[in-house]
Length: 126
Image (cartoon, rainbow, N blue to C red; front, side, top):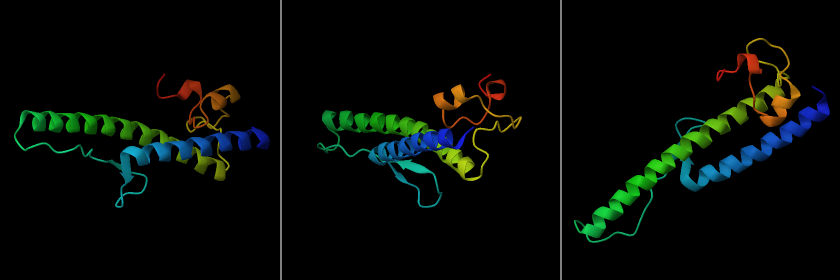
């Protein structure tokens, strides 16, 4: 892969990285004990009188919102990890090479997913 294309894909990766971090900051906070890990924030709704019907509904809504945040946090965190690994591969001059067979990943695949780690033959989804 030529340097111009690598630079172009690096810029796309960096842009996606920044977008993912911004999205994560809305629903989670960085885990101080584990680099790269995020912890979903528990939502804080207005409190009703404890034990009232409204209070129980509010608590149920908070739990539902937290579950949605957890799911989104895991998805965003996973993609962010893939992006981070791709940026490390660029710095290590191994970007665009299949981690399994060490052959160059087709440019069409890299353009579709700049964080791709495997060629189609060795993709875990195949």
